[in-house]
Length: 141
Image (cartoon, rainbow, N blue to C red; front, side):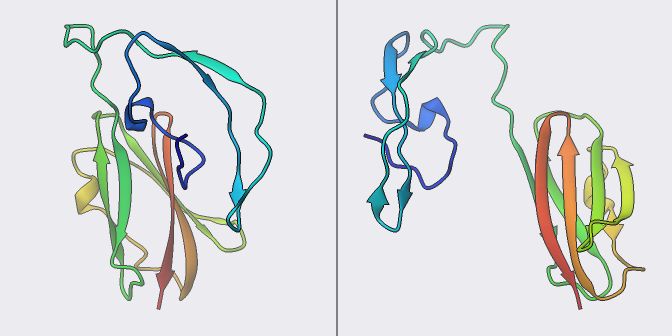
């Protein structure tokens, strides 16, 4: 049994898995301390032993943090990424209207300041790089 508060997990976070083994997996949702019925069984095979080779890709890491939040003048983004791909930043107001859209080089994202011309309110900031996407909510005082 493996309990996780999120709806996804990485295989390397499951204790006791053995490389190259086949496992049967069932999922149940816990709501209010009560587990619902299990879904249908899925079968998965863990990858073979993890050896460092020239073809082994590093694990992708992507995170984004907005600061300060709430903000008075403008806010910046702290983005951690595994690649140098261009980062897209889109800001929407709470009505879903696109307020700002930018493409920023991964090496200069920390210099970006956003929101100086925004009126007070709540905004959704979508930060993406390739297939990775983070949604952040930010408040302007």
